[in-house]
Amino acid sequence: MSAPARTVIPPMATQALPLLGHTLPMWRDPMPFLLEQHALAPVVRLRLGPKLVHLVTRPGPVRQVLVTEQHRFDKGGPFVDAARTLIGDGLGTCSAEDHRYQRPLMNEAFRRPCIDSYTTAMVECAEDMVASWQPGQIVDVCREMRRLACRALTRTLFSDPAQARLTLEIEEAYTVLMPGMWWQMVIPVGLVHKAPLPANRRFARARVTARSLIGRMVAAYRARGAGLGDGLSLIMSARDERGRGFTDDEVCDQIATLMIGGIPATADLLAWFFCVLSQDGTVEKELHGEADAVLGGRAPAHDDVSRLPRLGRALTETLRLYPSVSVLSRKVTRPVRLDGAALSPGDEVMFSPYCLHRDADVFPDPERFCPDRWLPGQVHQEQREAFIPFGSGTRKCIGDTYGMTEATLAAAVVMSRVRLAKVPGTPDAAPLLRMTLSPVPLKLTVEPRGIRDQGHQEAADGTTALRCPVHPAAD
Ligand code: HEM
Image (cartoon, rainbow, N blue to C red; front, side, top):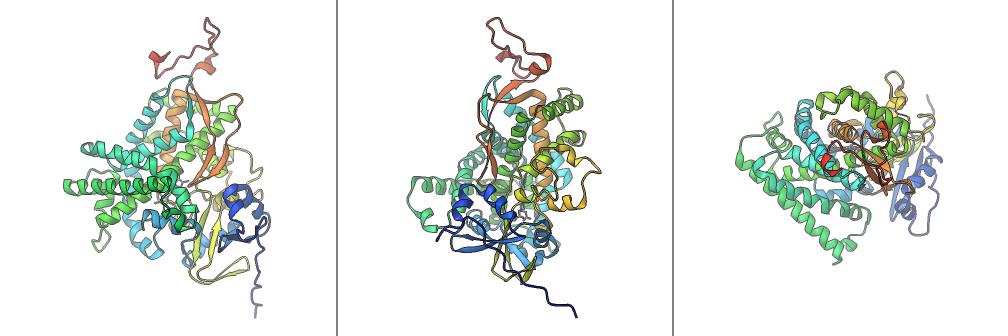
């Protein structure tokens, strides 16, 4: 008879403060704090205010949570409960039981052919963004990418030309709503959110506005009847094997979920990509070369995504070093052991793709940006399992292909037209964890392409003359 497995009491995380526990380091600078805990043990206990949370730090037990023993866990934990009160019970926050019904219906809008049909709008949005930039302009890259991701998502969800005005209003409402979401999620004190502060009032107004605008859009689509093949039509017409579909209210929850789940994550992937590129001239040159060779200056289309393998590897490596969703959590629903730690129903676990992706035992030289580590034949099973920028198991991101397609096309459009260059003397961007992990501050200069490659032309007054292929008139 084998001996019963030994139960381990996980060590308490470092940097605890009386009463506050680990709340302060988690808010102030969470990524270095979490990395420090990863060095301690496979499971580490953290105190976040009154809550005890188990931080899982090794790929094996994280895989147990997400895949092999996912039936012992449900959505929950520090951020998910707060998100549920803000965006309802859509796909990202619903219970495992509701998820079994919701996910197949939502999959209808994320099949490969649907995503291919969304790419024209994605490319147009990226072209418009680049066309709005002037040569020499310094752009706030996070803000630009957020606008782009928001515009692309609203255009692919709502393509009805009769609702163009409403689409724009939804886009604006989410621009206001998004920054406030994080504070509502991380400050665990309901009373603070109810206080009559201007920020709370603004947030509450934006939430009501966004919800009512989406409600109007759903009603307009319902009245129209015939589907348009866009995201909203596909979600509204999806039926399960018993003929059940979403109610209009449920459709609104799903749209809010896609906006909150999709926009910042895709925007931050693109922001980090341009951040890294502005610091790595060699990779930048290779990627510009690939974009020029494949596209020759024309706009990309969906079948170009697979023709840009270097770009695909660079985006993958960006997600390894800077996964937009850097901290995830779950609630235990059935007793489970994680590396000897016995967890009971109601316990909460947390894990960080950011830290897992920097484990030197799995990814050699983990701090180095090295797209070639993703060359075919180079990636081994352990790396595949530890690489979880989109999560894993049944709750894996529904927008993974959508997000990667959009990021590839947008990056290709930008790189074909311009170079986003570091402003001399500015500090390097650092990771800031809000809803997602953003590079802050990230201001880059728009340099029309061709200048650096062809050699800078000195103007008569000694300044560099910029020739912009998209804005010849601006030169
Ligand atoms: C690069 C871009 C993206 C990244 C890095 C990302 C990351 C993630 C991660 C890590 C999860 C799993 C969360 C968990 O296990 O708790 C997730 C779930 C989800 N994501 Fe994404 N995401 C991205 C793009 C998108 C897009 C474009 C959309 C929608 C248009 C989207 C919608 C969702 C939804 C609805 C879920 C919940 C899925 C479910 O529970 O079935 N995401 N995402």
